[in-house]
Image (cartoon, rainbow, N blue to C red; front, side):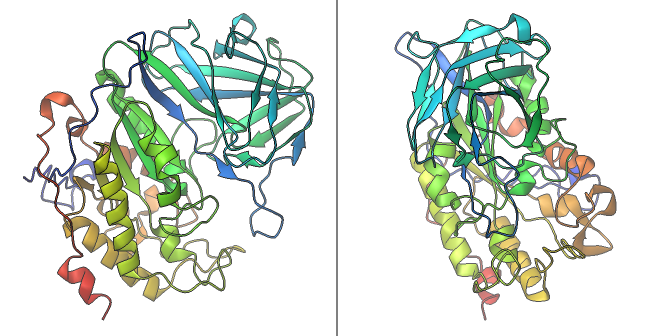
Length: 442
């Protein structure tokens, strides 16, 4: 069945969206419940990435090692809960990470926080390739609450696994400062270091919407440390309904090839399917698959092919449907003029623009997704459809700014996720490229 929000894509951003619901997913799992009957949901997330070497065009901006230092990170949860668990990741690490002590507090109350334990102990070892889940902390958090997490790393620690950018910063201070109200950092670094998730205990079966994407989902171009990414804005809209939003965007992410992180199909299991409470997936990927080849990011790489991108999307949808997760496809925003005048220019060409439009045509009409959100229609300049609207452009012609990200979230109708208004799933069918998509290859 089809439920259009509005058929006039030329009006306000919220009306520029067309959500075509043709549900093909199995019913989602009833709950992610512990053996004691508790329900846990991912309320905040940062996807791990492998650190890259000095040969890549972008520096990581983080130190190679830390030693006897405390990290203080602020995160804003989406859904609230009666208790909290923290998740740390060393997914791409090559050596164990010793954690000496962790404290959790409401933001602004770091001196009066709660000790975080692991199997009843203050210290823990985060094994290479693994994640570490804390014991439940008796801290009730409201929806959209900001938390302060302080982690002491007592021994030399290589940063091989981290989250780059995200318009967030980590404060670093010497020695064990986990309980210090006056943190006095000696350094501030971008991104996330080892902390990758916050789980909350929910009263009912959890409902998490996961946003899988690249730097546009990760929020490049938004105001730093202000939670102005489009998944943040969506979380504000869904919080009154008890629905959480987990941001699985990473800068440089691609659907088919590794970039500043492994490809989406490789990280789908850990970043989406295994997230407690995941019921819906919004996927916005392909901009870097199209834009990177021939640019300074991948100068020797062959151009992307439409059929390859379509096949990748079909596989992603099939994997999510097999786990009872609905998939909302998002059209790619325009990027003419992207990064012009910088050392990273080369993202755009006329051929890449034709491929972007062909992929968007397939996303809209190919029948692969349970719903489609038309971010292209929301963000494009009506007078120059290959470019972002000037008032939504961060200035680099690739990433939206705060207003653009807010418009993206406003274009998603919360009724899509509210249980009373969710249509019943229809039998899945194998989608095929649309006729227009096939013609673009000729």
